[in-house]
Image (cartoon, rainbow, N blue to C red; front, side):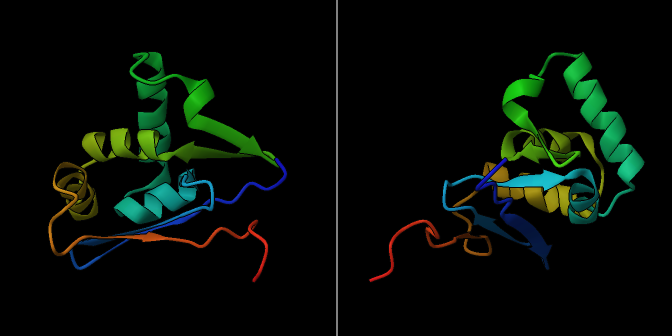
Length: 117
């Protein structure tokens, strides 16, 4: 997928930092989600399957496959935060429920496609 940028999410000392792409999106692969939430990749994979099987989310809008690697959007990452049990997933849930809290930060990346001045 040409022009596909993933963005990133980090959780450090209860602080959630999201770096979105120029298009305002965040897409992470299963290993990245596992590291983010401090869980095994198998737990991420099993919970993604369960979310799709229950039809809580649809594969089309929440998954992209780029060069054979599956990426998941912020909606899926949020759903996983409520299914996985770790300190990091708890911090992420708090960020989702209280995004204006002073210890949480949202970072926007500059639009790399915009012409330079």
